[in-house]
Amino acid sequence: MPANSPQKPTVLVAGAGITGLSAAWLLARDGYPVEVHDAAPTAGGLLEPVQFRGLPCDRGSHRIHPESHPLLRELTSDAGWVEQPRRGRLVLGGRQMAYPPQVGDFLKGLGARTAAHMGLNFLTRPGALAGFKRWEEDRKTIDDDVGFEAFVTGRVGRRAYTQFYAPYVEKVWGLHPNEISQTVAKARISTASPLTTLSKALKSGPVPDRVFLYPRGGMVELIEFFQTGLKLAGVPIHYDSPIGTKEVQAWKGPVLYSGHLSDLVDQPNLKHRGLYLLHIALPKGSVGQTDTFYLPERDFWFGRVSQPARFSDELSDDECDVLCLEIPEGRWGNDHDFSEDILKIQAQLVHAGIIPSTVDIGEMKQTFVPRVYPMYKRNWTQYWSEALRQVASMGQILPIGRQGLFLHCNIDQCVYIADEAVRHLNAGGTAADWIPKAKGFLDLRVRD
Image (tube, rainbow, N blue to C red):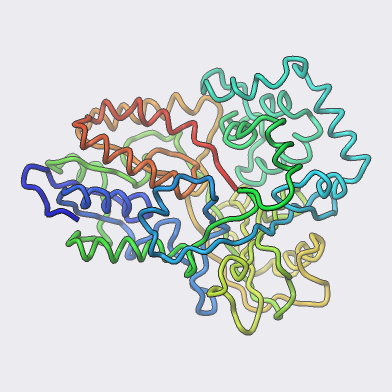
């Protein structure tokens, strides 16, 4: 990295998660003096590991897709990336099928009658004769928020909405889908047109969405990589050092803010739902080769169940199989104790075909992760835009990343946003100029 230039101001980076650490790295590489502050006692944010049986387990099912933005892998090329085959399973209607879907397995898993009903419902949905142009139109506007229910039924039909999408929304937010913004649907349904999705599913052999990349030592390896690089560059990281409105306004230079946007401005409509993680131990050989199970239906409290050992051999326990169950806060609130529900959870795992009925859950660790899912209620972008205008009026503050911009996005996209912010500073951009760029990040598509 080049020596710090006296002409460049010292930049304050608020937050030591993947966004803040990568921003600090990029700034130092470009010759800026940098200070990093985080309210937590350790770095990592949502990538801080959960220690379970001596393993640094991720906070849920995290992975990097081959089509992800390449900057993250370029910056961390020495972090020990490995390529893994995707062995996901979608649990639906009492059956399991491959995920990402392949047409033959998908139709077989649904059953002929259900598949026929869903296909007919899709073809006869309102507006079907308009063709697939609407998928491109979805990418062009965030206004005229018709709501999640109307958006989804208009694109995929009532049957798919009822079976797939409505239970997911209710599970995550604990609200009726009509209260939720179409933004949630656009981030997933509009990723590709039906023809593109179908052509990908018909392919055989290795295709990009059937493999994933993963750091050998877990996602914490990325945090450790940036920490080591910043230490060598002489960049201080201050822990237990919260940065709020008072601190950023007192700072004399630029601020890249990756903390929560709602902590910086008074905007009560920008809220989140959290996530419960249950790491459990099972007898060795109980689960098989699946890396992640996806469970959208109401029968199951958990939305995803992942197996760390299938992401990396270094996350394998010699004595047992480890699973991570993700239970969205939804209707539970933020103080539920699932240790009292262990038999119900075990029964659900058996019902889903994830574990056999002959095994019992052994050790369990519960972790609650607050503020994971942005509460995208209808017309939320009005409050979001006002919040960014408030930030811009406070001085040279650029909110970045998942928390700073109230986004639901992937790890590589956080690094991409950090890079765009550093480029913005290098070009002499202001906080007011950053708002139009930030609006472009609302079109980022969530991959899983």
